Length: 258
Image (cartoon, rainbow, N blue to C red; front, side, top):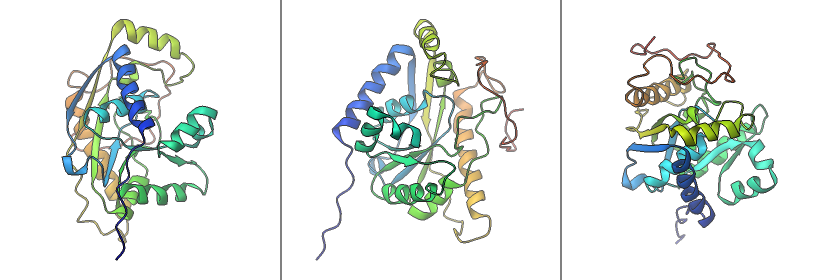
C-alpha cells in the first residue's frame, strides 16, 4: 500500500527569514495583525490572496504570516529568482517563480496548484502593485481564480494598509529616504486575515467562471480592507509622487467609496 506524501514543511531558512522580516518591520513601523487563519489550514492546503500596495509588501506579509504560524510559499516575479543570492534563497525556500508575459506563466500556475494542495501559497490577484488613485484593489487577473479551481483549496483574503508609507513605488530608487522617514514616523501597518471566499457554487468549466471568481476574490479583499482605513475612505493621506496613476483597471463594487 502506497504511503501518502508528507505535507510540505517550510525550510529553516524561510522560517528564520520570517523572523527577520518581523524584526525589520518593527524597526520602521508598528505592525498590527488581526483576524486569523483556521488552525487546520495553517500548513495548507490554502491560498492567501492579498492586495499589493508597495515593494515592502512581501516583508510585511512574511512578518504578518509568522504571527499566525503560517509560512507561505510566495508566487514572485522571475526577476527575484535571477538575483545571485536572493534567487538561490527563494528557490531553497520553495517559492514559485512567475515569468510574467511569457508562455512559462502557465507552468507557474501548474506548480502553484500542486503546491497549494499541501502548503500555503500567497498570491497577489492584481498581478502588480496597484495604481488606483485611492489605493483600492484593482480589477484582478484571473490567475488566482484558475489556481483555486485547479487546486480545489480555500482562498482566504488578506488586506494590508500602511506599507505604502515605508517604501516608494520606484524602490530601490528613493528607498533610503523612505526608510529614514519611516524610522522617524513609525507608521502603523495593519494586516487582516479575512473569511474564506465562497466559490463552491461556480462551475470551473462554465463560461466566465474565472472572471466571476476573480471579482469575488477582489471584492473580499476590498471588504477586508475597508475597516483598516476608516479615516482614509477615499484617498490615502500619504501620497507617493513616484507612483503613477492608472484607472483603466479600476474594480468597481456597489459599496465602494468614491
